[in-house]
Amino acid sequence: MADTLYLLVPGLLGPWPFSPAESVGPPPVAPALRWLLARAESHPAPLTPEATLFELFELPAPEAADLPVAALTRLADGGESGDGGWWLRADPVHLRADSRTAFLVDARVLAIEPDEARALVAAFNQTFAEDGLRLTAPRPDRWYLRVPADPGIRTVPLNDAIGRDIDPRLPQGPAERRWRTLLTEIQMLFHHHPVNQARAARNQPLINSVWFWGGGVCPSGARIPPVELYADDPLTQGLARLAGLTASPTPKHAEDWRNAAIETRSLVVLEALRHALIDRDLDAWREQVVALEHDWFVPGRLWLQEGALDALHLYPGNGRSYTLTRAARWWFWRRPRPLSADLLYREPQ
Image (cartoon, rainbow, N blue to C red; front, side, top):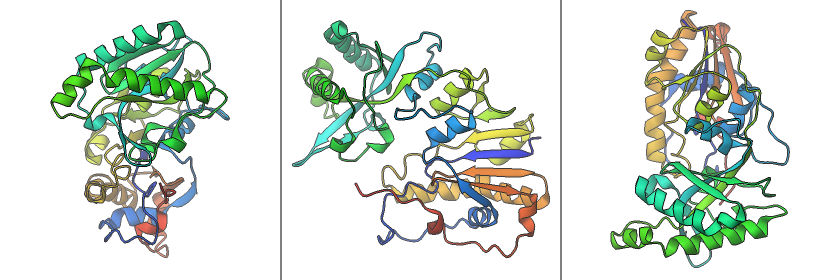
């Protein structure tokens, strides 16, 4: 049985979408999580789950450039690492305008059918072939743009743009004008496409743009110390493939992980909270924290107290990591504190 558990839980403690002064109701009852946070040694960690995964897989984060998320998630979607291409995620989105700006709605609420994705992608490729651009959609909700070379832009991850003013989050850099113009042309192309005419007739939100992010070439040399991987997200799966490993599906309960684990170390990525804070859905966030408390944090605390687990490393999305060993059971003077003390607050929209 594994004796060291790494838990990556995006959205557990941030980024929190409210200011400290805002009243958002009582926090979830999570005494085991509060015990773990109080008894742990805390250290700085990357601010995003993507950067955390790069660190865990011993890949350097590029300077003044995007994390090459597109090239890696494409591996999880059936792509190859040796083609040498420069890839951008070009995920289908709905832009909703108000009197001042436009806000982004991602594909989770668009219910895109495969034939809709194929038709829009074909229209894009026919229109922009002479520009050296090639769009593919291995999944209806995850699209990829291959470009001939470094496009000369920095981008904002999709999750950081959902529900927010897109103007300050559009591509920036030496070639930003070209790419912002391209987005406008894509919006015009998609708006008039029969796919969206049919969606409008059905009162469905239009697939009226894409969001560029995560650009780069596929890195090499990904490695992670001997560990079993349990993850459903495409970035971890892509990194695992790059490292010559396989990521198993995420267990629902810690007991399921304990019964299945063979290696002495395991990395488990728990995705249930990833979008709750992005959507400002506090009811969903509280509900999922309570579920994780029951399924993972209570067993983790018990195993540390019994000495059945040597170490637990928690990455809760607040720019900190929390490491506990068996010795934590004796640190009774470290009293649990409110969860709000460990939240990472996001800047106002």
